[in-house]
Length: 332
Image (cartoon, rainbow, N blue to C red; front, side, top):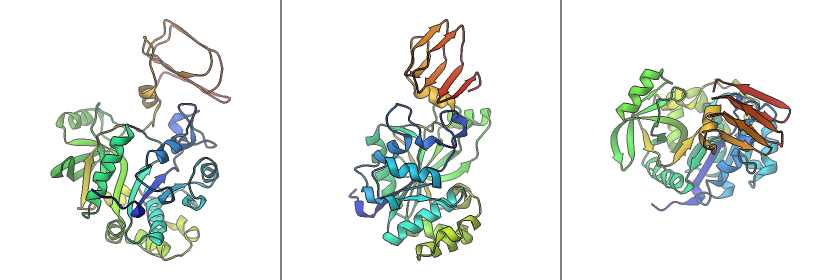
């Protein structure tokens, strides 16, 4: 498929607090702005995995005022593309705002929406999947990426895949809320239920029509903002609602692309344990300081300075040191 890069836009949502990753993530340094490898932040990783599929001038970041200032310092994007929401109103108003600003530039844009705090590898497969989603978006579908479960996770929403549309692409039968363990186990065994990773692709006209049909109040805001009105004057009047509730669960033109890449949403310490290199005793370790382990196994140790740490006769414990804050827990 030939992609016109000038009409492909991406919106990176970077407004989350990431409270479950304290003290790595805090109000002063929310999750998208932390680094797990001592180098790039999660936000920088998210932007860079879009290239060369997109042009830099077509990448938007939506976040809060404080994070917007920090994002402008670290990202090689036009400053005007880093948008500070006046207040938090969940993902549907965020997407309506981003869509309106993009529509001012390109009436027939294709819009990719993705969170700023995921770990995705390999990048090449991710981009290939996005191209498949773009193709279905241009066929009139609201397209979402679904991740095949490798465990009965209770912390994710699920997508029930239906009839096949194209290779790896299916009509969506239903969206399912975060299940209990037994239901999640059933979903995994069924094989037609995939994790909702919150990555969407659609045509501007398609999402505008969806807002008009399923959430007229937000459509009025979208139409007003895309016409040039000041979103800072009335954004706080928007209903707090997710894009799943506002649009995706109601629409009948939703397609899901089965992801071919490895995905982790980094939402918990358990997720951090999964992606961190392990030693012989299954300790996941990321630290710049000296670490001593004696009769210790299946622990998570993360420290972003040279603090010396010693663990003795401890199993399945998390020790997280960041700045002046320290977390020690067995529940993760």
